[in-house]
Image 1 (cartoon, one colour):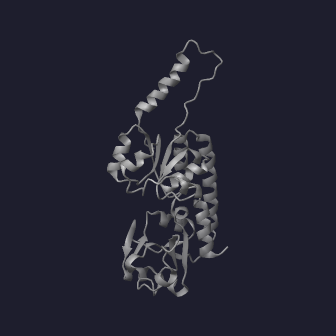
Image 2 (cartoon, rainbow, N blue to C red; image 1 turned 180 degrees about the vertical axis):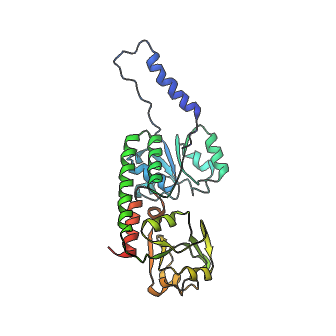
Image 3 (cartoon, rainbow, N blue to C red; image 1 turned 60 degrees about the vertical axis):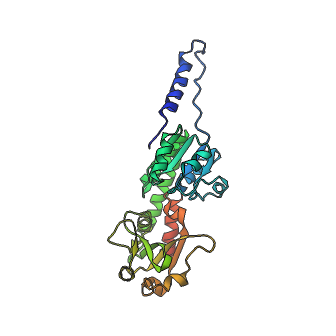
Length: 294
């Protein structure tokens, strides 16, 4: 966790110290605790989701465009896409605390925000139960609700461990799953190792068919055929923005794959699938059920 606004922290310390230094304070009068920040801006869908899961959604004054769940978040002002933020848009909502997911940007915008007189907390990400728990506790500390955060972190890690145990019990052979981030222009951008897609596929008992590289990369038609996925996994996109099975399996890259033979396309809400937040266990169970049956 990275915090800014040293002056604000010192001001709170001095104010708290004054309670004890004052000769007029009675011996049995409890010291007043500093009030936690009320005007919170969450940058990153997982940040917003965790704030609501901690019952602190009433303190949010804005969010970024990836923060689409829960439904109540959609009513908040939108400061833009988390990787293309402008200082003006962020500062215009007047936050006293910014909770930022790792990877937000661009860097020059973050530099401006860190220099402002605002508490700025950058929350480290990760793709396992320990990383989710750490995110929850970091956010809980920033919001002044560490007890709630500890309870939620334990609930989430327990649920994820149970979902993984169920997935591990599935018999071989394991399904080969290809996560397709985009099929724009007929070219597949897929998720390799060291990605959220890779992690959730493995947690759900599958094998990532995109082997031999890290990150999200474009896959050639030949490489897609060699990958031989049994299942194509994509994020569910609302409205008319999603790629249909007819379109997907007509692409040369996928037309001769086992997935095309069975027309097996799985779509799951993107934030739930890749957010690695409170609903990750639900996503793992859903994917496992769709891969191997209930």
